[in-house]
Structures are given as C-alpha cells and as structure tokens.
Length: 308
Length: 244
Image 1 (tube, rainbow over the protein chains, first blue to last red):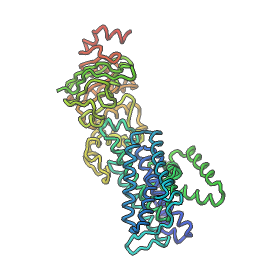
Image 2: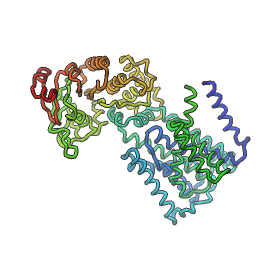
Image 3: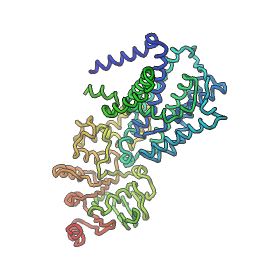
Image 4: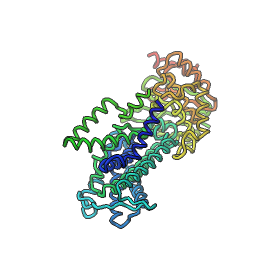
C-alpha cells in the first residue's frame, strides 16, 4: 500500500508540473483558482480542524487582504512582496481584533459572532461607496512585479508562481502542526477543560491560532485579487466563508491535504457542472449531502479506510 | 504550610447553596478524602478549588498563596492538578500524545511553533518513563477512545501526575470501575509519593478509608463532620445520612 501512495504522489506531482503543457489555458486557470482557494481552506482548517473553532466568517480576512491589494495597486504600489506582507498584516490585524470579540464564545455562538463580524465588513464594502465603490468593486487590478526577472503576465507563470506559494503555505502549516504549539491546538480541540486543568492558557492559544489563520487567509486574498484583477463585496460574502467550510467537509478537515482536495472538488464541480446545467448549485448540494451521509470524515477518508 | 485553606467558602447557584460556609485546612503531605451523599457539593468544591468556578463569597489559598480570583491555568501553574469525575481526556489522540500534553504543560517549549514536538528529548523521555512506570507503554500508539474504561481512568491519574503537582485533586477516581480495577487504581493512588498532597472525592467508603487518613463529610454543602477514620465511623450523624 505504501508503494501505491508513493506512486500516487509522484503521479500528482508530475501532473501538476506538466499540467500547463497538457491542458488548455481554461483548465490552467481553474487549477490556479484551486490553489488559491486551497490556501484559504487550509487557513480555515487551522481553526476548524485543528483547534475546533467553527468559524463562519472566514471571508473577512480574505476580503480585507483582497481590498488592501486593490487600494495599494491604485495607490501605485506594484511590488508583490510588499503587498503580500501588508495583506497578511491586514488579515492578521483584523483577526486580532475580531478574535477579541469572538473567542469568548463557543460552538454555535462562536459561529454566529464570526458570521456577524464578517457581515459588518461586507456591509462596509457594499455601502461605503465613496471608498469601496460599492458593488461595482475595484476592477482593473494589474499583475504585480515579483522581481527575479519573472514576468507574471503569462498565465503559465502565474500558475507556477501560485503553486510555489501554495507549497510554502503547506510547508508552514506542516511545521506548525508538528510543533508543540500545534499539538496544544489539537488538545484544545479535544477538551478545553482538560487543557485548562493541565495549566494551558487556552484563550491565548486560541487567540494566536485565530490570528495565524487570519494571516494565512490574507495570502489567499492577495493572490485572488491579483489573479482575478477585481475585488468586490463578494470577497467578504457568507457564500465564500461557507464554500471554504464545504471544502473542509468534502476534503476532510484536520488533515494536511484535505483542504486542497476539497478545493479541487468544489472548483471543478462549480465550473464543469455549470457548463452542463444552470442548476449546478443543486448538483453541488446533492454531492454535499451525499458526502456528509457516506463519508463524514471527508472523501479523503476513503483512502485511509482502504489502507486499513 | 497548608496545601489548601478555604475560609467560609460559599457558592450559590441562583438561590441554591451548593457550598455553604466551608472552612477547610489541609496540610502538606496529607491525604484527605471528601465524602458525602449525592448532591452534597463535593464536585462543586473541587471546581472552586481548581478555579473552574468562582465562589460567591469566601477565600481560597493554595500552598500559601491567595488564589480566590485566579484562573484554572494560573492555579495549575502553582502546582495543582485535578482529574475529572466524567473521564475528560483527548479521545482522538493517541495515549502517547495524551500523556505528552500533560508533560508539555509545564515546559517552556509549549509555545514553540517551529520545532517538531518529537525533537524535544526531555519531553519525549518523560512521557516514555511515565508510560513505562504505569505498564502502558505497549499501548502508546492506541487512540485513547480505544482504551478500556478502566485504562482511561488510569490515564486520568497519570496525566495529572505528568504536570508534577504538589496538590492533587482526584474526583472519584474509581467511579464505574470493576472491583478488580478498583483495587488496582486504589493501590496506585496509595503508592503515590507522600510529598504530593492528595484530596480525594469518593463515593465508595471502602476506597476512601483505604487511602485517606483524614476524612471530611459534606452534607447539603456544609461540613457535617471531620476527623480520623475512627471518629468518622463512630459518628452517629454520619451513619444517619449514609444509612438513613
């Protein structure tokens, strides 16, 4: 079985590397979206899968970073590295502020507070027309400069660049989750009261995890703004927050690759099914219900089950 | 020095006095059992001592420090550990990871976010020693939810010992155990180092008498009697509430 999984990994690695030369630019674009939304879903999984905090408003940090990218672009800032650091900063700061309000609550109350907070930002983006141009959004964001002699104009370059960022985030997450800090987060997910009794400052760990998730979500927001060239209130929407949750449910939360698999399934379903029927959200709904009923730990769990 | 001292401790739940005017003094190194019928306030008293509940009035000091307003994790840092009446462990983690979380709790490394947990030799070693001492090493990779109930009750005790406490609060450690398991857990608790002050809530009088030298009887939230085994056994008020 181990041989099989090595073979599978090599197959996927080769597929990702040669994908642009095998498929049309339409599909390359889809995979770029998959990578960006996978980063977003991974950031949410720090909360949902590893700390046990079911956030319903994770789009807040994505949207803040996306809008920051838009504003900075039109203010004349074209350096990607500066913008991504600022985007991560804004995502983290927003999470640091929202965390103070949300982490006091648990379970459904936590869900509702995070939902309400993200809706406040959505409201600002939608209504404060003089700043955000309302639902017209900020179109026409150009590609940034990343230096190193690489031009991000061709789609294929964007593809590889986003893939590298995805790998960096994956590695960062891998390191964090193996550390004593990540171990502590899983303890909190399993039993908060036991962690308190052992002497862990549970609130502080949750708060730090919350900020970290906001920073990672910021990365995906910046990438999304540059890739689509357009930010608008939907970057803050419940739709996006819930989509990330669905990715975790489909791919399996609390695992390293689950969010990426979930992202691939949802992006492909949305785009491929919508080519056949306008009722694609109905199809997605059916798939969602089926997965919950059949594989409550995500589609990825089939592989694990097969191994046992 | 007293390991624990409470002064006129009271806890009111919306009109009901779960704990009323309880003043306790427990010396360092002592083994004390707190007994009493259902609803006497034993677990509430533990919640107050460990900081999971705050008292309505009165004071608590632990190991010579006033802790009445401290959070649970702050009290744990002073050297208090507790177990739970209803098994409260990390069900989806392995036995090794469970104990490791106890060991890690008192290490500075707990905030480290870049080094793998396996690279902290001391933590890994301490966890290994605890599991070997308790004859559970061969089950280290078993998920906690797959351990038997009796083993889980043992893990409750081992995990609290992992934080090297000076005061140990055991909330019905033998609850729900078979007679054979009860004997095992009782002997384990009796074998704990004497420098760990132990306070034990017990329903099973035999276990309480086996482990503790001093006994406090709670009834309707107040102390009904306190003293040595003989004094408690000979106390007519105690026989009355237990035998009706």
